[in-house]
Length: 370
Ligand code: ZN
Ligand code: ZN
Image (cartoon, protein in one colour):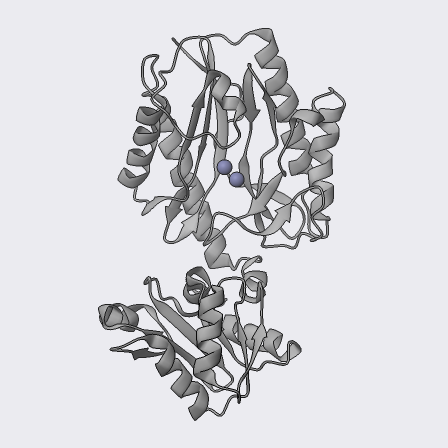
């Protein structure tokens, strides 16, 4: 970062990202790569359109897209662009021949079998195709300062939308209506949209970790689980809170306290160098003390950024290690059939020395008057 008379100039991160990708490609003995997964295309070039393939080679990076994006490309991309009037792949193959490339890495986990075969036929026998999985994703797991700021803004917007929507919660309202209210608030606050389909689950339905909102009405004396995330400037946020309509019974309070304790234990385990599996284990251990670990049936969290689910995974068998600049969720939950579920989820940043919880929303067990 450069300091110029009180102005902070953040250098464009894209050339450095592409240079690091080329470094990774060398290790894979490929030298060049096609990037088809759109969040990866955006990360490397700035392009946000829905049709574009990048060719990254030591000679430079070129985007291949169609005429709909001619204008957008010149505004967004910092690399060369080829506006193709026909299909993009034959044009890309021409460039591969022009540069006399003999090996090309492809995002094999993002291409269909047919696409792989078609491009192999197009490139011909002179070009060896190499399966490259998760290369750009591995770069994306550690966020730049600009990305961290973008996630902070998204997280703040999400919490504000939750706060506003909470003021609208009334018995008689349906889950779908509350979800619509949340989505509307996000957009009003400036989000492009939701990062994923908003989850609103009342009463026993809160025991379904990924419940879709239904026409069921909210009633007094019920748990209400909301899992929501915004997308702002391309960056996601993710938060779950559980509130109670009317004063909660002792059982709900006990469960809430147990999940909160587990969540705080996992958050406290977040620091650079910590094994992701250990962060998961910390929360699970807290639940085991209360005999509740068997009701925690998913992993503790996930990275997020341009996509809602990115590396690293924070699970029982996760192999990764946390590094400064990673942004992850911590979201343990307990789900009891016939009663309901409680999950508490924050978005947190791995700092140089430990952890910063980005989500500003209170984790007190909120009671909605009913
Ligand atoms: Zn969530
Ligand atoms: Zn999540």
